[in-house]
Image (cartoon, rainbow, N blue to C red):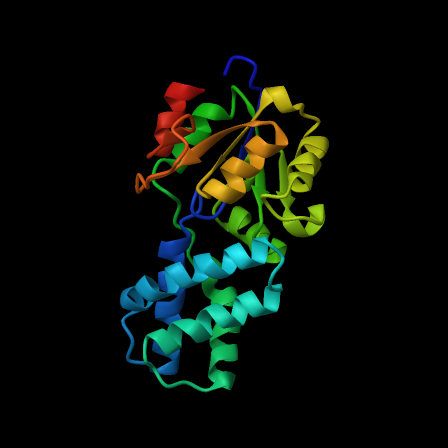
Length: 228
């Protein structure tokens, strides 16, 4: 790790607590619409559906609108809750609007970034919708830590495509051998970075089993203080 000068972070599920903030957004929506739904039970169904749709989106098999609406529609269907298409569209829009009302971070985020910021140049690479990601970074006060923000819309490609990493390194004025990627998606963040030729650390808080043992893994962000 001695050659590392630039650290590239994923945002959602790595630094920004998407699950907690999403649950709070849905809770607010259900209260406004007088829906008798437990937001945490809803999230237990929503989370894997959302992940599945994001993987399709990353592969360019669906567009942004399909992702935005279908993940909500499928969750209500799995939840056996009768709802109209108009209501689904309303909830999908409100979710995007309310998502950044709360900005809880993954445990250890600030401690870790404070440790790293004076030693390395920090960056973000995200597949999230740019207009939402920018607000997340600003409202959570994370933007002050990062010199460059690369989103898939600006880069024209999504992780794990090598071109988004190439774009990120170009605007960061960084070389492959002095860069490392840290993220929670094994396919998009870790394999994407490694296939492009840069080092990667898999943020794996649930200690999920992976087939490749040589991958550097951490279960807590603060473990980066011992690696970098």
